[in-house]
Amino acid sequence: MNEVINNIIKSNKDIFEKNIKIEKINIGFTNTIYSVDDKYIVKICSDYKNEVNFKNEIDFYNKNKYNDLIPKLFYYDISKNNIPYYYEIIEKINGVSLYSVWHTFSEEQRENIIHQLCNIMKSIHLNKGKKYNWCNSIKMKYNTLFKTIKTLNIFDSEEENKLKEAYLKFDKYLESNDFVLIHNDLHFDNIFYDMGKIKIIDFERSMYAPRDFELDIIYRMIRKPWKFASEETEKYVKKEDYSNIMKYIEKYYEELIDIPNLYKRINIYDIVYYMEQLIDYPHLKELKDDILRSCNDLIKE
Image (cartoon, rainbow, N blue to C red; front, side):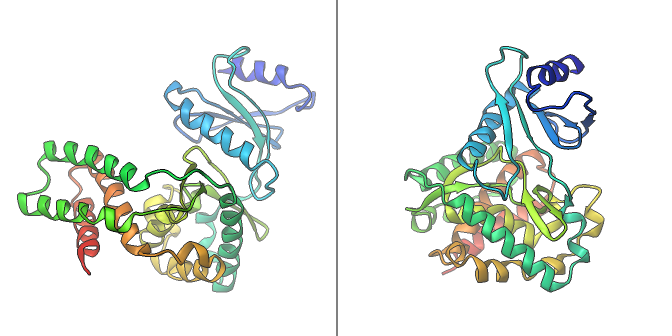
């Protein structure tokens, strides 16, 4: 990979200075990351299976090129002419993961941070998408997962019936008309904090979806904040520190909360999310319980 980064540096002399410092950063599993001069990040898609997501991130940057609340994209290349990989050169964001400092903040500081986050979400959501059948897309995903779960014999017949009963509610609650560009992975490890200001990173999962789907990860993080923390930052996580986040979102981004049947929709998103997790970790009773709890909440009138 040394030859690859050297070729990237040579091909982009107009961006980089002459006597540069290159440092490999050991984060991520699907990309190889370098810091250059402590100003730039060179992100190389070294796993070909991740090219679709990598291209998705580039598209996100292009749709938000004038947004100073996210890192700046200086250059990207998906031609594979000079090197056999997709790559991008982006601004290196100063600061630390929000997870690593959230426990040190006063409630006033936390409200200020969520206010900033709401402004970032609003700016991204200005990108409008074409309407499509959101309910069918979720149902297709559910059905694929359900078939796999049946082969694992995790649920008994009564529990399977509970899942089927919940599935019948999807059409009632998932009708959607407002489609916007969402980040789709807004937990605190993807939010960087520096001197009172935040910026967000990692746009590979961005997509056009109903506005409320932005809450899928955020609201799950609020309820189980340790789930998205790194090993390094998990020790700082206390659930009570996250208890007012939804209240602040409602205050500063009312349009995101004021959606018909919001929590029923979130129940559905939870079911699908935890089904995905359960397939990977079928021995975890907690995941099974989370699915059944979400089914019960969805079914309740």
